[in-house]
Amino acid sequence: MYIVTVDQGTSSTKTALWDAGGDLVAEATASYDLERPEPLWAQIDAERWWDACCSTVRAVLAQGGVRPGDVAVVALDGIGWTLVPVDAELRPLVPAMTWLDRRAEAEAAELRASADAEWLVDLVANSLDAAYITPKLAWLHRHRPDAFATARWFLTASGFLVARLTGVPTCDLTQAYGFHCFDIRREAWDPAAAALLGIPLDRLPPLRYAGDVAGGVSPASAAATGLAEGTPVLVGALDAAVGALGGGVTRPGQTQDQGGQAGGMGMSVRDVVVEPRLIFSHHVLPGQYLLQSGTVGGGTLGWFREILGRPDLPFEALSEEAATAAPGSGGLVFLPYMAGERTPLWSSTARGVFVGLSYATRRAEMVRSIMEGCAFAVYDNLRIAEATGVTVTEWLGTGGAARSATWNQIKADVTGRPFVVARRADGGEGGHGLGLFALGARAAGLAGDPGETVARMLPGRRVYEPDPARHARYAELFEVYLALSRGLLPTFDRLAAVTAAGSAIQ
Image (cartoon, rainbow, N blue to C red):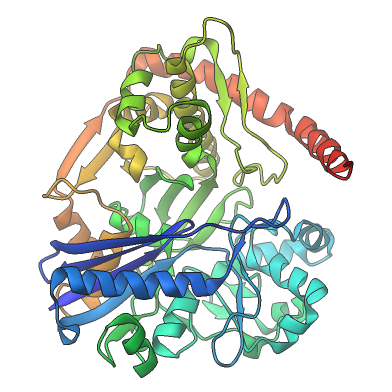
């Protein structure tokens, strides 16, 4: 028997075929670009996701030489905070508004100014920011009333793919916190909050646990994907929650560093924590939540290589070059706000900044300062999380950044705590695919507790111990980072206003 996992991300969909023992049989990736017709918009035709899902599933089945009937289950995840309004035939009515889309700034400001704002934030344990689905729904109602009125379902990204595969609309618990009519404690839609927000409850799909089976592959989807009709499909989940599981976050206190395009952290906790500067959701493991942060600097090294560096320079070479620069990068400090910043600033206007450039600055210092700035951004959130009373028991590195020994050591030295990178027996990394496999294996009866499955499949652990002298150095630089981060916020706002005014001049 085999398991198919589909990881629908911001810029690509990665699909894998696994055998019953957890060995990778085949992988396929399909890329796509977001559309940005306006400065704050970040949208995509959700049909692109469906096409990517179909093509990659067909590819892994062909590569693996697997008969469709031998696939026991399909498990998938998707990006969060994404609104996909669909009609009764599950066809998108407007382009999907992704987590990077901040067009609903005005609607979010109105919600924050309302008398019920504090209640709504406490209900769902998340802030009323433009990135969430609630303000996007308000924007849709105001600017596209036709689509709002026509919509049969308001789906998430993963919910859209599950619905297209099975014909069954669902919203899993790990994605529901994007709606501020979700009672996170009762795990139910709240009628009073929905009425207040003008969200018809009958347009919100049923809430389900991520590891449950949503339904079987429909005849039309079987033809499109090459899967057998009736193949069980899981409800799906938030990519960050699945990535946390796949990275080894299986017990309270374990905390994942998300070293990818969307950086941040995810800490498992037992109880609801309301800290509006951070993000809070269900974990994919029952009885656990995730206190999360979300930063946007993870793709900065790719930007640097493409725009300011050499496009042909491998990531490993950049990492080795950064190691030749001293901690602190010769007095160069970087703010990694390349697309605004999410936690804890929640700013659409924040931008990337190098402070301390001189003629003595080499490319090595610039690369290292990027790595240090991204580490500072996560540490900023980690300190806020710990101020709520939660405790980090283990600091786990995942994502592409975890391939860099230099970056891993920087994270250990910045935080002053051991940084652990776990790998599969074959040398591969944990992550979304592994987390999805663990959920799928449980649903198919091939394995038990997903947390135990992940622990078994991540036996290789390398620990980066913090150096006390470097940590002391970074503690001083972190205070500089904080002063720049908060002190430049009014300047970012002013710059955005000047830029907007200038764009009208031809």
